Amino acid sequence: MINLKRLRLVALIEGTTLLLLLFVAVPLKYKMGLPEIVSVMGPVHGFAFVAYVAALIAALGTGIISSVKLILGTVAAFIPFGSFVFERFMLKETQS
Image (cartoon, rainbow, N blue to C red; front, side, top):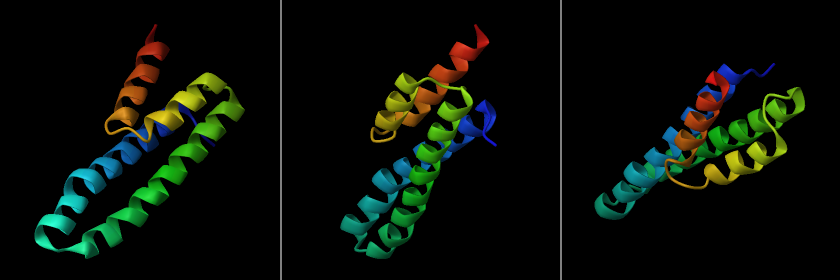
């Protein structure tokens, strides 16, 4: 069962894994010759991304978010720091 707190957590995890992949693993691969880091971090981020999209879809199904937010949240997942901005936007909206 999905709720807003879990959705926010999954968004933060997805955003963190994207940043680790882009700003830690990829530079280590190309600067230090360590492709193993990307081989580990890539699937971790892939799992986090799939879990995030699944959580968005579940949240849409339970009425926590709208279809517009589903699209915005999915697009945000492709942009570094996008999931953090999306998570903050959802938090702000629920407090008003």
